[in-house]
Length: 446
Image (cartoon, rainbow, N blue to C red; front, side, top):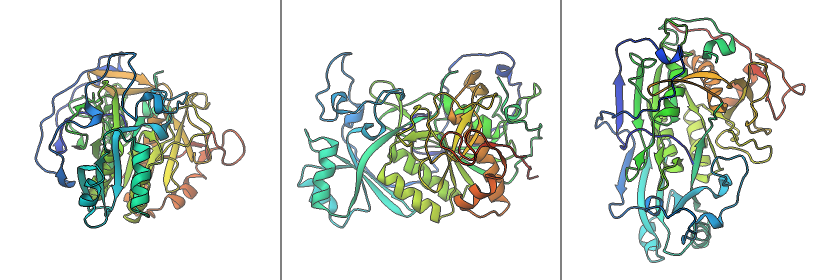
């Protein structure tokens, strides 16, 4: 499941924001969470062939009273638990109730499955990465896992999976982002010409740190659900491209253009969630916009649709950088960070110690500051911690490299940066720090 959203629309919001104000929240902590209304445009970049126009899906039905047991075959009683995750559910069992996903279905598929009690909720044609995804509603009384088995037997070789949910890799715990890594101040034009992608929650483009910056926004959450607050996305967006402020705060690459995709919404229990379908739409939009790098501060299960999209995106030259997640797990890999062609980033504190909640595993590539970082939030600013806040450092470095013509290959990029780190933990690459803590300069374009 992914967590963050800001606007109940699948349309693209393209805004060049102008104006200037002090980033007052970074002078004194302000813990105000505010939701802002978003103007919209009709420039839709993801082609959706059809939508289910009937009643709400199972995922958005009215929540039950606290303590009552779910009658759904995919209710809480059927899910494996996992200590360390905020919702306590194993990522493999964290999915939208009563929904499954199909990749590239065969001819007459809708007619054949309707005879089995399935119905089509949504058909998404992802032209820019080259495959179709159908979102299906399972027959009444049939669990998601049973539905996958039933269709798997009926259609051997078909790619089928649950509509997994992902969570944001943020924690609650200050250093300004540039000071945290030891970089010098830069001007407003640093990074001009670099196109950075971000799939996260909504973004408060009126925040003083983002006002006047080149931010183009698109929302891909379920229109049947309410949007989630634009808290996490605002923090990451400002870290990436926030403008330099007189108090010394600055984003890491203020001259870059940011393409920010929202995939988060509020579920039936008002929890901030994001699912595989919204993430896939976001990846497709990033391919269409030909961004140099995509920042992903999310973590979840190994979803088959996401795995396929990831491979196809790689063929299109799309480089993904993802946080390793905050479950505190040494056994369960977090995706998309654990995919071989994704650069995975973990978080350290000022003493170069690992963030206490960071996941560990052989997929960890690099470490960067992510504990006690000043971030922008709607209405002000806040000190935050999590692997989410480490990922932007790697993203902007790779974005600069790709914009200058470097190979669009995760393996070659790893090879470059493994020699630009402080080796922490065991000698060489290890499952805690990866190759080590990033120790390199940022060379601006423009």
